[in-house]
Each structure stands twice: as C-alpha cells, then as structure tokens.
Image 1 (cartoon, rainbow, N blue to C red):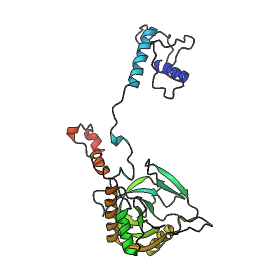
Image 2: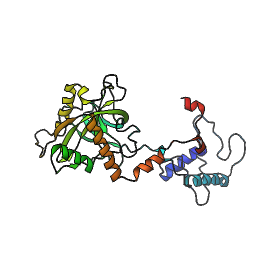
Image 3: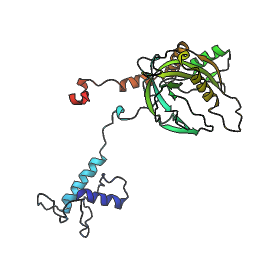
Image 4: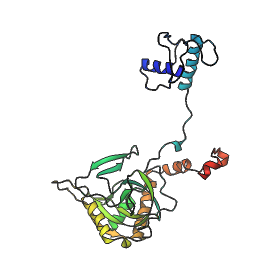
Length: 312
C-alpha cells in the first residue's frame, strides 16, 4: 500500500522515478479516503490499518516513515568503483601484456555493415560516422588498437620510407584489420589479434597506416605470421576498399588516398611501438590510472566471490 501511495504522489508531483519518495515539510502526506490504495493481487484494507499485525497507523506515523524514505533517497551514495563503468575503447582498454606481438583490438566494423561506424573520441560510444556511398564493404573486421596514437613518431617513419618531409600523423589511434574465417555479427567487441603486416596509407598528407592482423586461434588464418601468407586476392580487396571507401559518387576528392607500400610483420611491430610511445607522450597520466583501476583484487582487499562463483 505504501509503494502504491508513493507512485500516486510521484505522478501528482511530476516525478520520473516512482521509487524515490518525496519529503514533506510537515510529515503529513495528503489523505485520500475515497481512493484506497491497492497492490496487485492483494486484499484491500482500511487506509489506516497495517495488514498483518492489526495495528492502527495514524497519519503522523505514516508521514514520518515517508520522511525517512525521502531522507535515505537524498543521502549521498558512496562513490561507485570505476570497474562498474564500461571502459573507453581507446583510453580505458589495455593494449595487452604481449603487445605488440599480440594485441587487444576494439572492433568497430564487420564485413556485413553497410555503414561506417566509428568510436566517438569524447564519449567512447560507437557512433554512425557515415553510410557507405558505394556497394563495397570492408572485407575483414576493422577497428582500432587501444592506447596508440599516430603522431610524430609514426609520421617520421612514413616520411622516412616515402621521402616526403611534410607528412604528419592523423592524431587518431592506429587502425587495424583482423582476418578471420568466422562470421562476426556486430562490432563493439574486443578480440585478440596477431599483426602480420600493414598498408602505408597517406590521406591528405597524414599518415593513416592500416595494420593487418589475424584473429588469434582462427582455424584458417590463425597460424599466419607474415602478410605474404595471406591470399593475394584478399590483400588486394583490402587495398581497393581503403582506396575507395571515402569516395562520393560524382565528386573528385581534392587529394585522394594513396597506399605507397605493403609491409611485413617487423615493420608493423615497429609502427605499433612508435604509436604506443606517441600515445604515452600525449597522455602521460592515463597509464598509471588505468593500472590502478585494473589491479587484481586480492583476498585481503575484501573479495566476496565464493568458490562456486570462481568455478563458474
């Protein structure tokens, strides 16, 4: 009866949450004898009788209880643990203990997507960037490598290999393609990937490399360790996709994308190391904070998991 009465009061006051009771300045809730409260499946009782104990409840007593509920709702809650929130895919997800040889990858796009999804850098949510204007789709899983940044060191490698002095980094996390024979239905997931090579791509004067990797444990691609191991037709499909995926029908881009080199595993690992250094230089305070958040909870720190939980 009390919960039903609270819901009625919330509706009268225009509140959105029916479980947070309002506080009353005089602890006297309005009395509505003509509309006795009922709960689903419960027997009706006189408004001033408490079911189960036959005790009479006055308006002062009921109002005091409502006042206590309101005080509880208004009291400050303890600060929630950081692990209760979903981590930012770029900053809050560790790249992996075995990096750069094995990486944690955040997948944004899968081959069945006809629109381009991209992480919103401010919120960390996956947003729709743009619909694909042509019928081509990405031939592989596509996403980003957490805690990487294409900045000065990445740009220096591209400038060294191409002989162009005006190359700059695109200030984004490194992009990565992950090859797998399995069908993955959606993005916004984390996978483990092993780099085998990459494309040296330049977009409007910016270094925009695309790392090529294989899904760890994949039955078909999982044992590949060099980009030369991959089917040449698949590599060509990836090249074609990245050279055309930004094109708009009837519009000639002022400075089209270009892929100057297809490189192997060693250079891909070097590029990933450089991007990690660029990231740490740009965001020096995030690494220790992430380490503190992801530190394992020991028994002395109050773990409440039971043996049954650990087995499951």
